Image (cartoon, rainbow, N blue to C red; front, side, top):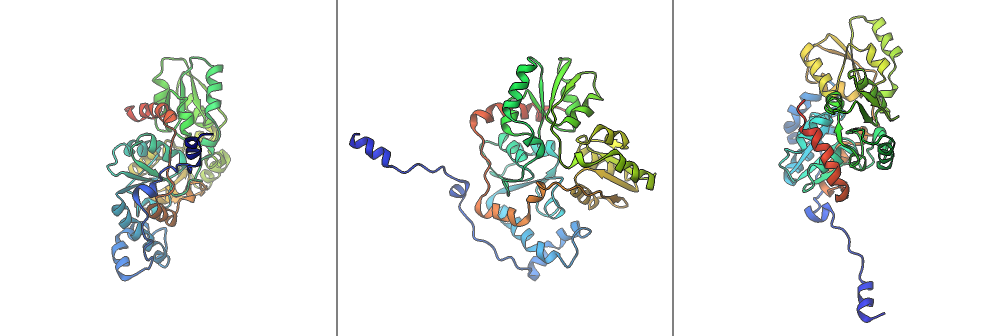
Length: 359
């Protein structure tokens, strides 16, 4: 071994620069419920007072106050999914909505830092559309049963089995899976996207129930995969019929990730955005949302005169995102979402095709 080789081999491995390296670490603020904090968060408490008792607000308010101040100091935008808890959804989010709304809005964000209050595939989607920006998720373990149900290798095998068949992949998937996809979809545009192909047969993956519900609305042959949302698969038609029997006036609104037998019992089925618009437009006296429980709480804060019946199935992954973790994300620039550029380039095409569809 030459002296030069010895010198090179002796060098320590280069550490990849982290978001904390690029932006620095901030000092943790004092989290005290002072008269000033009470005054500056009073208007925010009005948005959530039906869900957070007044006696508990002094616990939340210092975090809300600190996060709203630090996100401006950082130049960060907070994106929150409809399934986030009310104190996140109503008090600190700059943009809130369903998967399609967040994907579209992510492309319009001016800030260089995006904090995704949702699950990991949502943060990946934001990163795919903003590769030049820093995307953070407050808890990297916030996963998704649908995303975990399929891999890129699985999709490659499906393409071998069904050569030439278009692959429409639910946005609730990893970047690796999206990279093997023709176009992504959400629950709000899955039918339109499947209909956009000339092929008589479509692979609609990985949500089996969404695909089955799409199949009822198109003449195309829909091939499915046995992936399920662990929240929506728990609802049953028998459960909903019992609510109907107890109160025939109740309106039941279901998410297409539920089994078709459940959707058959519902008065309306649609994406989270569609469900919200249904309630806001129709204002039914009593409504049961067949979806993640926090969404009912978030809509309840925005409509008057509607009573929400809540079966209260919670997503354990969404609930990993909390105010303390969001604050840490701002302070320490964690957890950063990174995607292999070779995967990102292909996955981005599938997402962009979805985002650019007019529906």
